[in-house]
Image 1 (cartoon, rainbow, N blue to C red):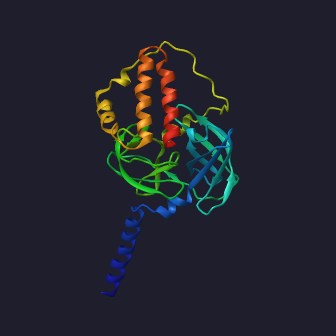
Image 2: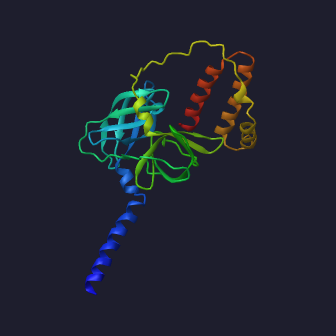
Image 3: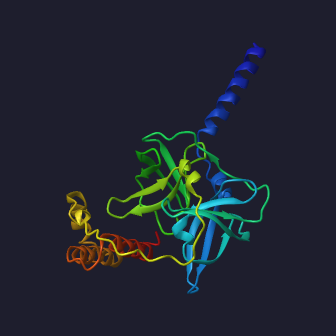
Length: 269
């Protein structure tokens, strides 16, 4: 009888370990999450989040967090600061590598797969933890049902096992969802950072279909009544840019650059 009890106790311990592995651990996520502090040429401060990918100081963040950088500092969850060196980037995928002089630091494990509807957890540098689900699961990216906040860009999207399933890039204020890119795209981070951005060459693209999307227009109509002045400014800019493209005063590409820059300025995304 006593032997049977020992066997049952042993299996209970094993099962408890399995259950524990299937519960997201915020403290574990904190150890691999870093605050990114960027100073630009105008001495303005931009804040974002990064995730440790290796024990020897390789981090990843969103490219738009560091695209105006003059110097970059990253800070771990214990408050220790590191001078960061910028590595390769990917403008198209909005990703960038950072390197710090550190050894044997905790780092994240990459998830093997992502499932539509699975629970996800997003942690920002200031320990804002958000829980949601995978609302759309594409080969290269995911959409989550969360309206993320300032400074979360570059942060990790984790599954219940604390594995990294994506890096958060931006939010869509119209649909109140957020977009994140999967680790499969890390292999495309192979460009050298150029501090001076080249202006877009003049094109003949005056497509205004994005101004006439019925679903988007319905959402714009709802938020146009918002008391939030930032959203009001964003909406007014959208209307103005649409008119300028229709009048051929701006190309679609130029309007998109202005729109995205305004989004970063207003919402730090």
